[in-house]
Length: 236
Image (cartoon, rainbow, N blue to C red):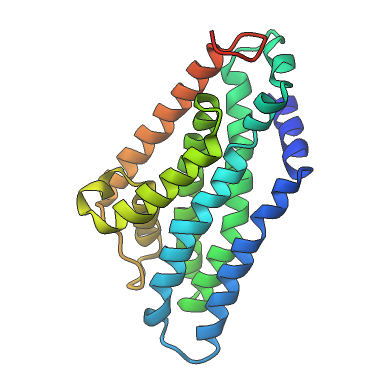
C-alpha cells in the first residue's frame, strides 16, 4: 500500500494539474486581507469569504482536481492495467490513492482556512476551520475518487455536482441541506470553533452520522467499481 501511495503522490505532484491548486487558496487569503486591514468588522466579511469562497468553492474544487486525478489519469492513459495485473486486493489500490487525495486536499485547504479564521477571530476559529475543511476533504475526495471510476467524464460531472447541488440547491433549498457535504463540514467547523461567526444549517448529529455514511458508502462503491474492471481497463 505504501508503494501505491508513493507512486500516486509522485505522479500527482509532478503533473501540471497540481499548479491548479494554488490560485484559489491565494485568492481566498488575499480577499480576506482587504477587509481585515481596512478595519471592516469580521461579521461583515467572514461568511462570504469562509462559506461562499472557502466551503462552497475552494474545498470542493481542490478535491475535484485531486480526487479525479489519483485514478482518473491512470484510467485515461491506460496505465491502470499495470496495477490491475498485480495480485493486489482492489481495496489495497483504492485506499492508498484515496488517502493521498485526502492528504493533498486537506493540506491545500488547511493553510488558507486557518489564515482567514485567524484574521477574522483568532487561532480558535482557524483551528475549527481546519477540522471542518478536513472533514470536507475526506468526503469530497471519496466522492470524486468513486466518480472517476464510474464515469469517463468525472470532472464535468463533478463540476455539475459542485455548482448545482453544493453551490445552489444546498444554499437555497433547505430540504437539500441534509444531503450536502458543505453543510456537514460547516456544521463541524462551527462546533469545533464555537464561533458566532459561523452557523451550521444541520444538526451536529446529522453532520457526523451522514459524514460516516457518505465516506463508507462511496469508498465501498469505489472498491466495488474497481473490482469490475478487467486487465484491459474496461468494466466487465
